[in-house]
Amino acid sequence: MNHSSTLDTSSHQQPILSLQAVTKIYDEGGSRQTVLDSVDLQIAAGERLVLLGRSGSGKSTLLNLLSGIDLATSGSVRFEGADLARLSERERTLLRRMRVGFVFQFFNLIPTLTVEENLLLPLELAGRSTTRESKRALELLDRVGLAGRRGSFPDVLSGGEQQRVAIARALVHDPVVLLADEPTGNLDEETAEGVLTLLQETLAATGKTLVMATHSRTVAGLGDRIVRVHGGKLETEPNSVTL
Image (cartoon, rainbow, N blue to C red; front, side, top):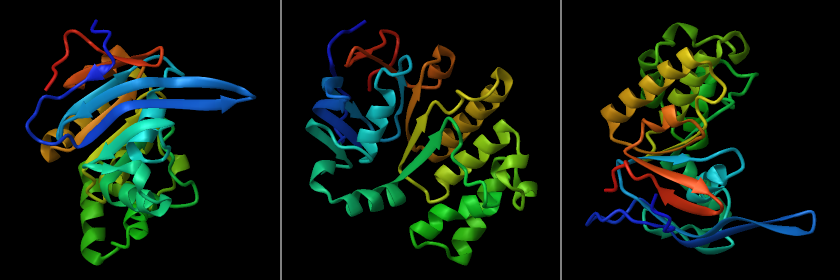
């Protein structure tokens, strides 16, 4: 393994996401825990990057920093060239609503909303709930094979169906970056394989940038590049492709 914490994409284009000398420290019960220790990372537009590491290694922290949900203790995090620390909380929220899609391990569907209402929620939050956008949302639901469940509530869907709805919801506002946090971690092996196939097909069709956190080497195979998160550092897997 390359034990350097500097992971660069040597593209002539500006990276869509980048971390420079980023440290993240949490105060827990009077003690300070360093989750990330002066790490560098650059992610090219259209790249599929997998963050591989055990639970508690800092993968979710990285996703939160890349999306501006959380801010670094030191160093800079840039999204399409914008330093997230220089944006207001509202500006970061608007950036996520417009430019970022999220897929979570536990789906995070709102139980009191139907499948269709869950799907349309990101459009409403972004002020884009037009007839045209709603039609596109239902086409997306059809693409993930759930057009017939638009009026159902999440609790009557299987885990795989809920995750397919979650993927559709993450894509409905046409984000440039898709962040996935253990998207198959709550699914059985066969269902997980179907969800990964759907993700692969979607990414191939749209060319969106994916950053996915997982503890599974099988899931990690989806990536163009695998970065191991361990001991507060980032390590490039030797067999992965560095753009």
